[in-house]
Length: 105
Image (cartoon, rainbow, N blue to C red):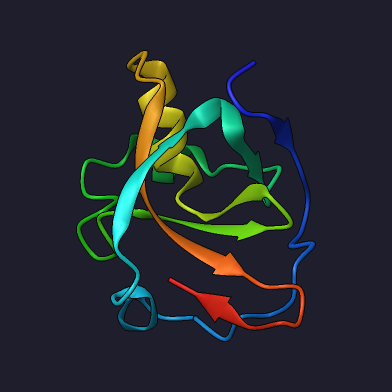
């Protein structure tokens, strides 16, 4: 299995980060693909195969850690590409969501 599990939706509180600029203060780090739970079931094949799919967005996937689980919020196409290239890790910005709804980078 590529991911820990495939989910649908975000089971954590809204963190208010929407744009790439909002995420820019979260430092990237490596995460293992088999530790990620996706928040989307569907992947647009055009996005996966596009040569410039990361040109207009963040270079890193966006992950939210909530209750010890890593949720892949944005960058499913990057994660699938990594898996197809047999890479077990992905560089991602990991935002830690606290139980009171706060966040830390």
